[in-house]
Image 1: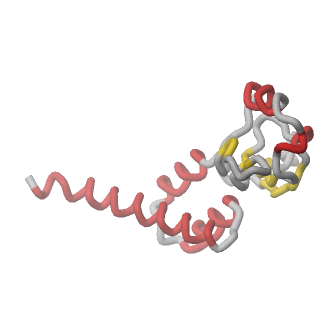
Image 2: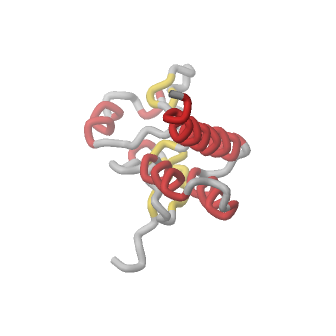
Image 3: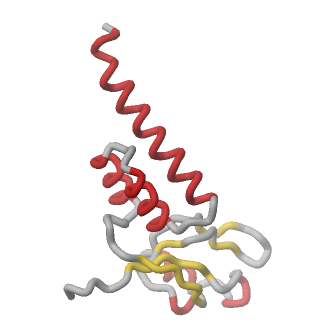
Length: 130
């Protein structure tokens, strides 16, 4: 009955709020880690759900930085901060894509001048514990 659905409705409401607030912060120009930091500081979200979003985004409290790089300097594990496009405007990969070895092999097939550069990527900073 209805009573059985209440916890699922509350959970769905929580997921929707996290997703829409994250999206709004990102559209204001915040990097994914900055948006998550703002959301953590608000203390109004379900912490396990917020950390699940961080995990999905590949940022579970780790420090990241935004870099602008030439295509030949992109490495596996970096995440595209913007859509990667050809100079003609055709999209090659969407913002949020995590770079892989096979993706780099495909990029090598493009003439360097065919891709819009520099490319903004999100890079995890090396941990101090390393």
